[in-house]
Image 1 (cartoon, rainbow, N blue to C red):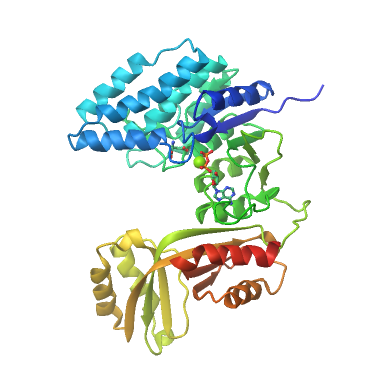
Image 2: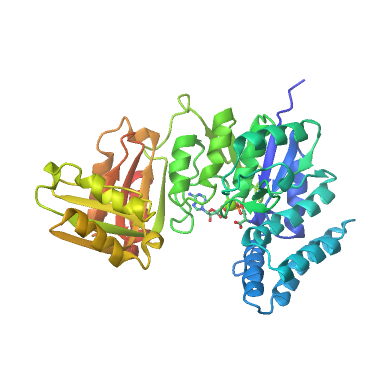
Length: 441
Ligand code: ADP
Ligand code: ASP
Ligand code: MG
């Protein structure tokens, strides 16, 4: 008999947005006895313009903190869940849970607690619908008192708890600290919970179910019908996820990579599509294209510094970066020339502090010129195939030049796995389409 592979299945917000989606999810889970551990997100958008429950919860928290009418927003959230209960004729009521959450809002709860209730409540409903055990993530996912995820304790406790479970629903996105307070991952963090559960249960596969048939070579909101990526390495995927391909949270890679568990991205609305498989090595698979994918992110600034003979001035770069470190500003890239140095930072990191930053750098290194250019977007062209192919960077630059797109910054990682370019915001979509067409069409 064929061995049943142990699978952890995570379903995203749109996969669980209403009763109809819950039915699809149940069919998927029941079709494979290996799908034993289920990680749900909070209900997402049912149609464009709809609200995500997580956003409604955060709005409730904000309005209650300001002393406004939060009850009416909370009523919308209750109705989302009650609608699902009614339509699926579930044998569970959330009345007591709603009362507890309402009391917490009235007392002034944290943002993390508020946001976490979306997956918590959805987990209770899904467990009831599936006939699976419900395990509160607060009892198996742990953070330290600085709010950092604690992988060692989590793996130990979760591994132990789930060992004695045939099947269970563990809500995504949150856990707790030693004080018993609820802490969330950053937005989109249910992907991380799924990866943690896969590791703790030594799953054979981590299936991540969403609303697209796998990872596409570019964001489908920018490129029309981009080609799917059948197979991709953890490293390529992390580059793309970090740079804005939001299908999978970039931090969801670590737990499964560590345990060598492949991820399969699948489509809840088209379960028979093969999706994207994410693995450690792909030697046995030939990629059809030189590049694997393109992703991009908005909201960066370039700090441009010029000084003659900068290169021969010992410690120049270090002094500049020490200003950033002192001000607690992370930098993303550091493209530099002989007499110029540019630093790419997130606009949000320097907001309201531009003047202070410029004057501190000027005082320390006396540049000939220094300025900050905002409205920069970064585009990453990623692919293991680029390592052995000459002229890839040239093709990227030539194609953009032909379209009259001005490149503001270039950076290539020494791994040759990616080329990062900076363009102005109005060129963002056009640049992604141009690069896609150059390599794919
Ligand atoms: P979920 O709610 O299931 O976690 P997300 O909204 O987080 O789903 O991620 C899926 C979405 O990611 C898709 O609907 C798509 O709009 C977007 N997306 C961005 N870049 C890509 C890409 N390269 N390939 C596929 N989808 C992408
Ligand atoms: N519900 C959370 C969010 O909207 C987490 C997730 O969906 O993964 O960010
Ligand atoms: Mg997501």
